[in-house]
Length: 188
Image 1 (cartoon, rainbow, N blue to C red):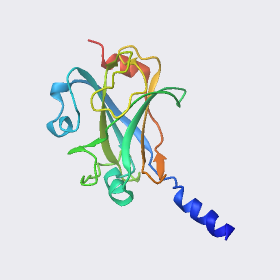
Image 2 (cartoon, rainbow, N blue to C red):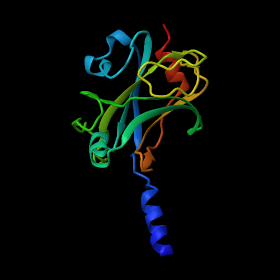
Image 3 (spheres, rainbow, N blue to C red):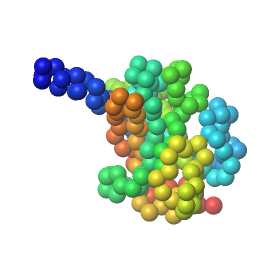
């Protein structure tokens, strides 16, 4: 009986879901009004200055959402020496046709090197500046703290995470965007 209870508890506690390996591609400043229409539809308020982070993954997150019924999001944190630090915010995950959901169909993009695994291209948006206080950035489900990417404190780490209500969860490797690249991107 004790073995049965332990097996049921283990089955109900969830498991770790592989979320892939990320590689940074590019980062660019963008005015909210210049975002593609499919992306704007998923964000609440696109006024102001944003940064767009493009990255590759070896995981088709739309397929993962369909198969595992996970909620998938992007986490941004300061990081030093490739290790994640203070979380800044979570953001939505986008593919070429807008937000990645169970109805998305993602097409692989050509891999960087011959023989490398299949690659999928994604992007996310983050407000350039979030003031102190209880203000939540538009389009972001959570707020981890105030920040200003015009004056980056360190490199920025991006990862894709996901989970469901029964404890299944996972997080990808980190894609690191160097501090000097962030600064040069937003220089007027």
